[in-house]
Structure formats: structure tokens, C-alpha cells
Image (cartoon, rainbow, N blue to C red; front, top):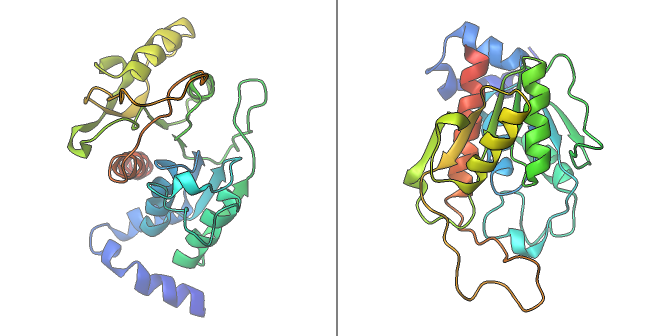
Length: 240
């Protein structure tokens, strides 16, 4: 047994008390692909790595900004200006040196989608762009590839109102309403998602003159919980 193997065996000892050896091996063999490393995605990535998912592909084109520091796990004074995929990849390898971490510096867009490898066991969507979420969901549905998508976590106060379910059974979330409408047009019949039943809050002071739309407000404990729920559902799919 190598030093790295011994180290991870010790680091995952508490997880091994909750899962069978077969389940631990299944996680280690699994390939999860995560799109988006913001307030939701950064926490989802961390949970995947700490749970022992052996291969994780991270997709994000952004760099860390000061405005990310209130909610994103990768955002520190020392990481401002760095690529999110680089910061998160290094962090995940520090958690599990045995993991196979691949960072792709790119936006997923309908006109330029990022390829999903054949060995991916589950896709996690933490993208903000609606057209990209729709296209990714349609792609995974057509490929019969398990996917979990996070809906709106911004402008919410209460993490206890976050739920997991099928997007076609949701109510109250404006993003879910758009997703349901557009996915029906594309023949998608099911999409597992993380969503909030709390109505989004819009501050009357939000937005500056000349801005096209108000800035999305956020608190540290809502998108983070959404990301952990996203990872939980993805891991559950792997263990099924």
C-alpha cells in the first residue's frame, strides 16, 4: 500500500462506517462531471471529493472575484483573480490525493457544448445560464445519463426550504417554471433537481440606473446547502 493509499484510507474511515465496502468501491470507480463552480458548484465539488468519488471533471470558465467571497468555497483573498477550476482542483487533490481531477476552463453553451465522456456516471448542473441548463438537460436525457440540476438559490434567506424532486412536480420557483416549459418542448420527461420553495426576494434598492437587470443577492448558507444537496443526490444515483 502506498503512502497516498494509506492516507486516503485513514481520511475516509468515517465514511466507511456508513457505507459498505462495495459502495465505497463504487464511489471510487465513479466519474462525476460538474458544470459550474460558484456558490452551489464549489460546495458540490467538495462533497464529491470528501465522499470518495474517484474521478471528477470540473467545468467553469470564470476566475475568482471579490464579490464571490460571501458564498463561494473557492473564494479567498489569496485566490482572487485565479481560475476557479485551478483553485478547486488543487483543493480537491489536497483532500484526496488519489482522486483523478480534471479541470476544463470553458463555458457550457448550446452553441459550444463541452463534451461529456462516455464513462461519466452522473452529471451535476450548477450553471447560471438558463439556455445552457436546458441544453445540458436535453443532452443527458437523450443519452439516458443521470443528471441532477440546481435551480435558483439566489435571493433566498432560508436554507430549510430547499427540496429535491422532479422539476415537473415543482411549484413557486420561476426558474423551474421556465425549465418545465422548455423541456416539454424538447421531449424531456423528467429532470431531478434541487430547488427552493421560498419565493425569491428582490430588494427595492437592487440595481443601478442603466443596468439591464438587478444583481442576484445571496447569503452564504443557501447556495452552499443547495450544493450539498446536489452532491447528495448525485452520490445517491451512483450508489443505486
